Length: 516
Image (cartoon, rainbow, N blue to C red; front, side, top):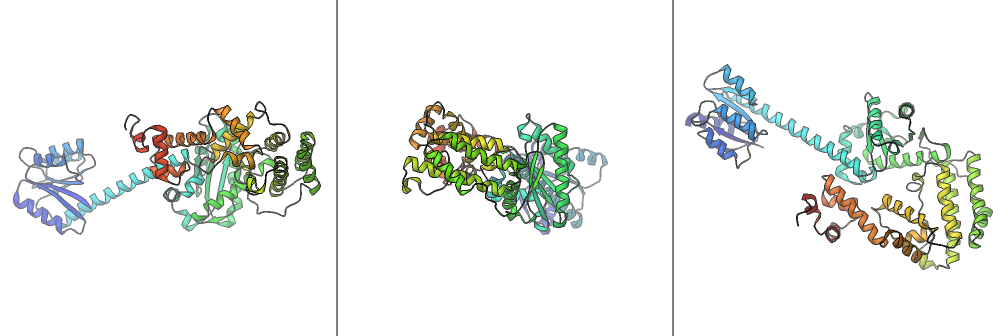
């Protein structure tokens, strides 16, 4: 709907113009009709106008003065000028002030309609361009402050992601590529690598995004399924070329062929499963997703029993020998990642059972036999076999030996890291103690407070509130969205918690800390 105002000092000319405007097959609202340019200017000080149609010759303030005023004070308002004669000098000045059309009297309905259509179409293009810029900015902000998993869960952001990929999800198959490693290099390198990859793929049906917090470059590569292998070779060559030029290590994972935006989360999961192969096969190349293969037994029943009994006896050296033998076997033999993960789970199962036995925890206390170490979340954060082995040895040592504050401080750093990666989820220190670190929960709680100066619940709230404050100041996300991003399903409870922590509401914080 175009809001139109008219300035014409001749009564009959003004009425003819208004009649012609009302008869146009365009949705318009005539919000004002004035005898002088000065009256129009006063009106525009308080009222929004999309288009002004003004005569050249008027008392008090002529049409060019009106056009100049509008150009300086209301640049989003379009202007048409009409006159009883054609004057080239007037036309030149009108162009300087951004006047869209110069119409001659008597007005012809077709000429007016064409001029109005041109204004309407131009405004629609501008609005669409602005909307696209806002969407692009919102998507860029999302990549800076959120993970791709967060984006997938947000319907509005997912639609913007789909639009950025130019609607290809509706018509084409695709493979998702996940590249990791650039963010571990000097500041700014990740963005530069992302730009380089985008440049190398600019003639391909591929779209490149960088999610900075998890250090992930995501490529959506659209092509026919039979070309998928060729696409993988292309991306693999780009990885190696960029890594060589930058002196960095880039490792990639590739999904199987997918179709539709609804398969994006599954494709991302494929990439995680694929890239985990770097633990066994090394970094610096692209790994393609492989469906779960036949599992081979890497931890025999005898080895599980020996590990269990060693932990129960608090014999760390013997337990460590069992685990060392497992890792040595994985290094020497060519094993697949699924069999490897299954063996890791057997190790954790032995540790957990021995821990429950030592602590004499009953079934109600342990709330079921499970442990917090997943293929998708936990395994993904280890890049080498040695890193993972060190982690497991630390858990093993902690379970076998007497827990002492001086030797267990590294666990607190592990917990802080776990919070950074999982703060959006429900987390309790008791669950981490029993099902991840296999420690007495009361002891871990005391140790955590001694090291951080606060209890775990307060630490988690502080972390979430700091994240929320960052999002409020640096993004245009709604408060309800931010609440979900930092782990609160109940927006009212989030606002209440935020106000208790900062003394003001999220909206007041966003507008300025001094308000409230």
